[in-house]
Image (cartoon, rainbow, N blue to C red; front, side, top):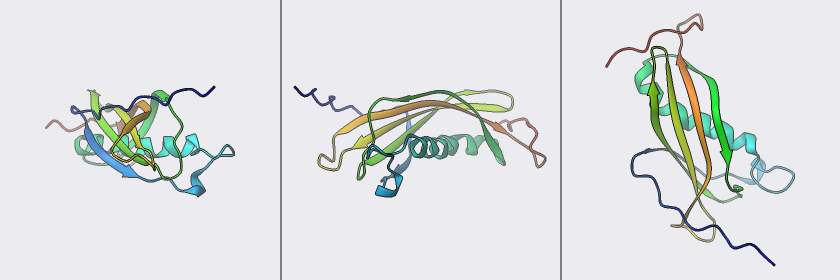
Length: 135
């Protein structure tokens, strides 16, 4: 008896599309799915796009507050990374990232595969936290 496929998801309208990527065979783990660490690295890249607009200089990832793998990512999936700033502090910015996959055989239907909450901190030339410029 097989389990039914998860229902297609709607893309978020209150978030910005910040990255699209297609994982390749070299990104697979031993099970033939995309390695979780590869997905995490892509989320970190996607999550940094919006804070870069505020930080106006160097910044670093300081915390992965939450990371949930909801479904496997497969070779050939088209991944869309959506981001939204959750909080702007004095030196840090927390971003929510949601990842949706268009499966190889069913493009146009999206499935949420991952979601994360990541915090970045603005840093100076010595790597010390610095205030985020007021806009």
